[in-house]
Amino acid sequence: MSFVKFLTSKVFLKQLGLAIVAVLVFCFFALKWLDITTNKGEFKVVPDLKGKSLNTVQIELKDRDLVMEIQDSANYNPDYPKYSVIEQDPVAGAQVKENRKIYLTLNPSGYRKVAVPNIVNRTFRQAKPTLEALQFEVGKTTYVDNIGKDIVLSMSHDGKKLSEGDMLPLTSKIDLVLGNGNRPSSN
Image 1 (tube, rainbow, N blue to C red):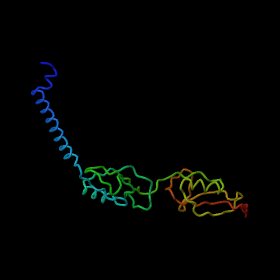
Image 2: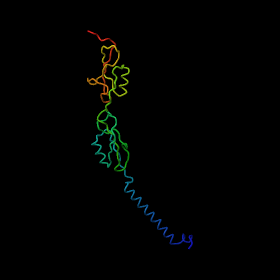
Image 3: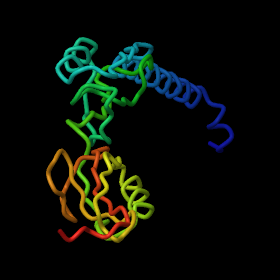
Image 4: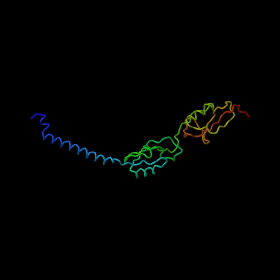
């Protein structure tokens, strides 16, 4: 039997037809199985979690069959309560599949602490931008008799004297004692 005759024979065409039907049936069942296991067309809406406490977030996500994943805390934001959600990914209103991880960024308990720079014996003009660059605020300025006009003689926070390297939270007010340019009186 020649090859061409074999390709046109009833036996070959019958086997080819059965193979095509088998492949089609297999593909049909594979696609149905994928639809069922991936929950095709079934979505959960991500709730707005910003500003909510961790306990509230856990309950809301569990009710929606979603999973919480906490990322590293961000910089302190005074507009949100401590340990509340300040960012989420995916965003509120997004449609996701069941058991999807929702990544959360939490508000820390306070501003991070920064070392106080050495500004003693520098001019106020130099000291102020140095403090502001580190996100400190210049508090009360007091002048005392000292020949160095506007020279920083000491610094304090809440009445406690500060030294270089002391740790304070960001946005802390640092009070400065400056010289007024007059010689100290020697009574």
